[in-house]
Each structure stands twice: as structure tokens, then as C-alpha cells.
Length: 138
Image (cartoon, rainbow, N blue to C red; front, top):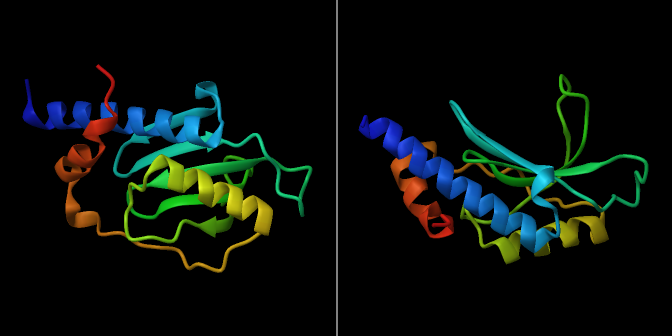
């Protein structure tokens, strides 16, 4: 097997498990989640809670290996999402319970002033896969 393909499989399995753990902590059903690994690893959770200021619009929790977690207002596929808040932290893979507290805080406080984080992209997929390995289900 190609070692690069094996690394991608490990990353995919780890990200899938991490996404399940975050979805459970946030209270989102597995059907409302997805992830993709292309030039950037990304994840999506459709939130069941609404932002009080815009009660008619759905919210989403999105993650990328470059920017970590953000709560945003759902938009049409071609539009840039309106980010309400970025998870402030130094870890691109925070504990699921921390992500759940972040989501609750954003919805209850309505907005965060934290700037958009940028994590080191040169950490590499192997390191990211290793960080996510504990979330892999056997």
C-alpha cells in the first residue's frame, strides 16, 4: 500500500472520530455532519440551535486544519459564510467539551471578538493524523 494513502486513511479515520466526538458533545446528530480531506482538511456540523439575533437562519460549526473551529451563519453554497466567532486557542484540535462550551458561549453571548486564528499548516498531515488517532473507533 502507498504510505501516502495509508496516512490519508489514518487522517480520515481520526477526523471522522473527532467529528463524531465533537458532534456528541455539541448535541448534533451524526447525519448533520460531514468532512472532507483535499488540499485542506475540513469538517462541518449543522447546529440545531439558533442565534438569537437572527432566529430565522441556521447556524453551522465548521473546522479546518488551518483555522480551527468557527460558528457561522449558514449561507448558500457559493457565498462566504458569515462567521460569528472563532474558537480562541492555540490548539487546532481542542477537546470536544471545549468546543461545546465555545458553541454555547457564542450562542448565549451572540458574538465573540476573538480574531481568526491561523495555525501552522506545516505541521503536516502525519502529525495531524497522530493527534486525531485517539478518536479512531476500532
